[in-house]
Amino acid sequence: MYRNGSDKELNALLDLFSDVEVIPFTLEDAKIASTVWAKLKTKGLTINDADIMISAVCIRCGERLMTLDRDFEKVKAVCDDLQLEILENR
Image (cartoon, rainbow, N blue to C red):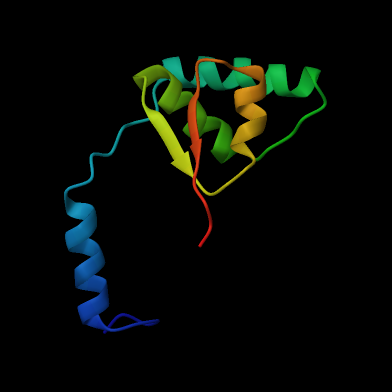
């Protein structure tokens, strides 16, 4: 049994995520991420490295990033290539 929930809940999550495409982090993403990090630093802005890496993958793939996390607005402020949609927290 899954420690913090039921096997049924775990299986439901595994089923849900089984259809999700995992996009690997590439050398190109690392280059984009380092550029984004430098631009943020120049403006005195900081966010966690994972968010910068997520942004880099979205930029490279031309994918829209949909999130509740407003930290990504800082990336958008220094990188027009990020397609960002902040979702409402309900």
